[in-house]
Length: 172
Image (cartoon, rainbow, N blue to C red; front, side, top):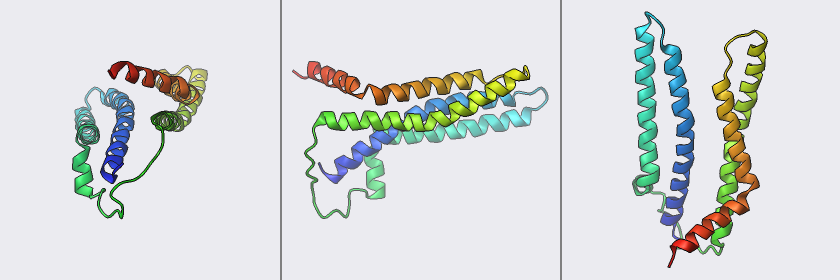
């Protein structure tokens, strides 16, 4: 494995994680714009829409660079320069790498979503006592994210077996 191919894989994995975070970002932007819609308060709505559009544009550019054009990032930052050896000798089986990737992805999702899940659960409990509006949408979102993270970590062997099986069926 060359330094260039290592950073290519790393940046693409970063792009996949960024894609996951973009889903949450879009839901938060929708909530922000929904809160900004107030009768007679057009300035706040315009500010919320332009700020949200700018943030989404930056995320789309970052996603496009990470997923489809990682060579640009590697060349601009000179990530593959300055290594003593031309090639890295790594003798790790593909399924081991996949297992680690699935576990790390699941763990990152869990670490990201569990604190928010606790926060919105407590907010739901507090607001249900006062008959106020409850953050059900965020509670559901972070419950699903936590469940996906847990399932990725706990069922990593099944997921890797499924990926390997599909790869074996595709290769002639």
